[in-house]
Image (cartoon, rainbow, N blue to C red; front, side, top):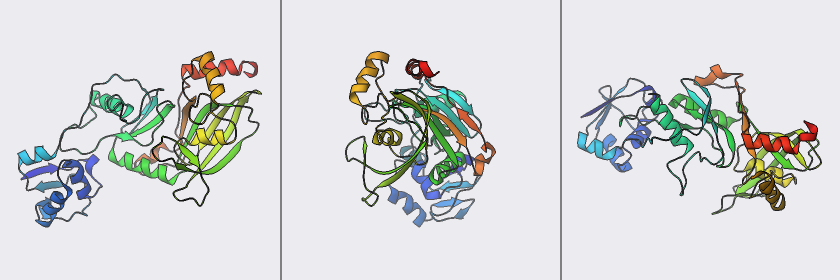
Length: 326
């Protein structure tokens, strides 16, 4: 008999989902067979797979320790150097400044030194991470930035916070995200851009499609010029939706591509920016988060704004290109 006391970060989810994460090496049919055989109890009573776990519930499973150890595995927490900066932190969330070049999640080339793993290493060092086999919750990011986009990434440190943040992101208008970039050409007024995109199969890019195209995703972007010359515009961009490469492809579609953008940009201009400033990537920075209407466990953040300073290279390029209008 294996007994587990359900902690706060494992509560408020279906018991079958919890067990699939806990017994991650066990086949699904093994888990559901345990329910059918009545081998799972909560607080001494038999339950079905739809039961919602509560904090301090006592879960009993007819499972030997050696089988439990076989079906579970400890979290991989790497000892990593911290490259991010902490912008805000409390008991529920962590908001960080991600540098250019660091992945949020791993890919085929790099699966260890990522922002997510660095955050776990940081929380473990602080003593805020449960690394035991009996915990299924892992703090994680609510959204991601491209490897070469810098700035704000939000992490949920508790299950309730992560669930609420994900719901707020889905519903929109609860969390406002703003970016800074420098684009080609002179933008003279604020614009609201609406379009439809679709991911290109087997490629890390999207393309514009018609509204009625199968799998078309609507995207909405608000672009506001801050400083302009005849050749460049420093702009603040608010994304109402969160599509892949949204800002980059939307600005490119109105002939104001982000400087340094190798996918949707002006390649001749990119070459000039590389020679002049050593810029090898899109100059895009997630600089502000505004908690407009947070709810649930994060309702106390209402009106909270987090601003992330621009990276050194961004400030250097901005100063050079807009010297005459500063």
